[in-house]
Length: 275
Image (cartoon, rainbow, N blue to C red; front, side, top):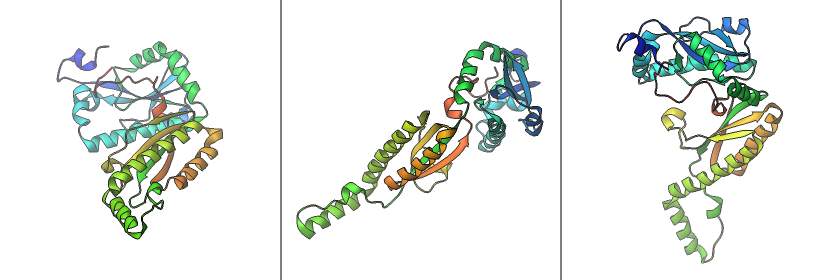
């Protein structure tokens, strides 16, 4: 699919594109009117093949291929764009299942979006069916410094001198041992939550600069949970936190199902590609 930039010539990105936020079964006029898109104006619906894409106008001077490649290197701009995009997806998720588009998915006009809905109707409808009555919850686990692994607390033979040596050895290797133990605890927590969730994903841990936490993240899990199982899921997170004091668990959500929309409308692509 050729891009707008290719059609108008390199360095001459003019006009507007269509920023895709997500796909739903349908959306009410009140939701559209109350939700601002990337240009600050209310989002709009593109309907085709029994599905609805929620989009906003994206001036190519800011959201075209070359402009996006520059702007995505600007952290302040990226944060503003991500917040605006997420606000639309979150508003849609409050009303029902939504297949979120990846950030910076810009198409060459509403007609291309309508064609996408028609071409991929079956898979998009299947994802919406799978997400109905479910939501995504995040569980993050952070290393707790100074927590002595239970395996190191067991008594051994040799009297007070041997006990001192064991304690000293544990102090010298506390960081490495703590990381090992917390890693095992994170794996156990994820496995237990996976057993109760409909689906689960274990994402790479976030850097401290992104997480804002004072200690290392060892678990960054996402879980698709049935509404009827949410109370049990929440209780299990609490129980696992008590069972594994080596890590501090943090439950977040509900979120739009970003982690479980593999058949979503946005293909993996280099930033700034205008479809």
